[in-house]
Length: 120
Image 1 (cartoon, rainbow, N blue to C red):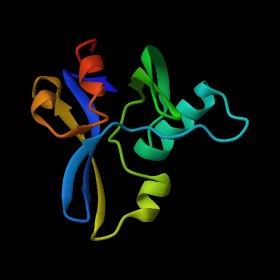
Image 2 (cartoon, rainbow, N blue to C red; image 1 turned 60 degrees about the vertical axis):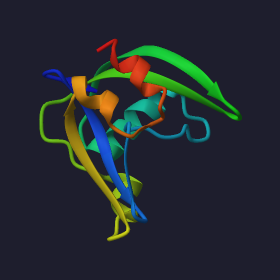
Image 3 (spheres, rainbow, N blue to C red; image 1 turned 90 degrees about the horizontal axis):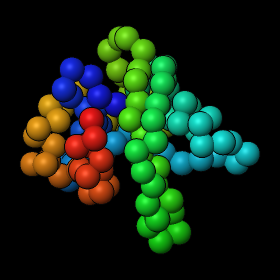
Image 4 (cartoon, rainbow, N blue to C red; image 1 turned 180 degrees about the vertical axis):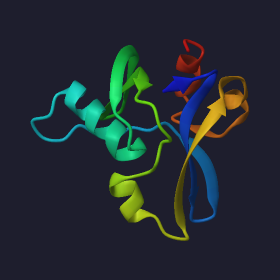
């Protein structure tokens, strides 16, 4: 999710740790990848998915990771879904537009995302 030279990341503060993650999540039962992508985008950003492009996939043990470049509807992103419900003083989620050129200096998970960001 990129806009104006920035990528949308979730700034996480969890049990004393600080790091960044890409909005996303898992595929639910009987859900296609596209359905999952649309649902996760709305849940984690409160914005609609306009279009998307698959950048790549990786295997990590028992999980497959799919990385997409997404265009979102206009508006200010807001955390929603399970992330909002699970938020407390020890588990904080903050959506931030981060300049693409500084992502290499951040503690971003999954680490692999850094190779895809160059495609933005």
